[in-house]
Amino acid sequence: MALTCDDSTFDGDSFPNLIITIDGPAGTGKSSVGRALANRIGLEFLDTGAMYRAATALALDQGVDITDGPAVARLAADADLHFVWAADPPTLLAHQKPYVTRLRDSDVTSAVSAVASLREVRDVLARKQMLIGRQHPRLVSEGRDQGSVVFPDADVKIYLDASARVRAARRVAQLAEMGVQVNLDDIEREQIARDDADANRPVGPLVCPADAVRVDTSRIEFDDVVDELERVVRTQLAARVNRGT
Image (tube, rainbow, N blue to C red; front, side):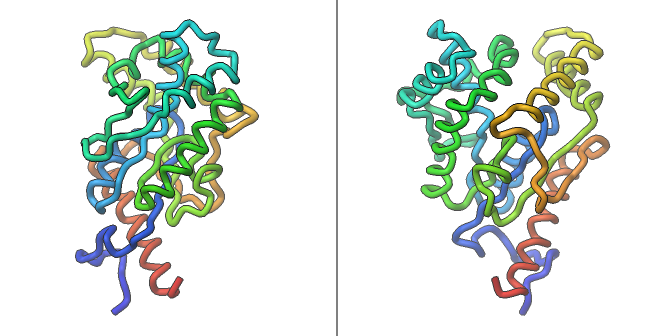
């Protein structure tokens, strides 16, 4: 019997090798919905943004100029960034030690876009992500260039989007929960500036792959976004199975 997109018996175990990429700008919920999607269909989750944040934190903590591409790339390579998959969410290790709590600090957030634009850093981390994909060929991988650069042959590609105002409001709410009060207009301006930097950097720019399904999360609640992504995955894999590919 042909697989259908609403087949309740379907899960990720049907595909021994399955890579799903989720790209999009900051604030669209890629990490949270990607992790939820991976849990639903039995895949591992690769948070590539955490890897760039780790490279940024390493540079800041060791006093390395964050504009020095070769130096920051050496730090990232020497740290042997990788994940412990037994944890949920997976724990990022640097120098064999957990390196998670530092990643969301404000100085890292302010500098990560600049670090992510460095060709040498992107080369090191993209190679590491490709290796992870070979070692763990059942992944939901989120980032800015997963479907365009790292996994161009991914089985399913998704591009999450939302207006800059909505993404800024989400960030303001997130910071408020942490006891930090910020101005919405200021955060929106920062968001737009980061979008522009990510989209126009010469290496690994933020793009929507031509074969990706675009999902706008501006007016969709979290659970509904995960439902929609699952529907996209089921539909695309059903079509693949029914084609016999």
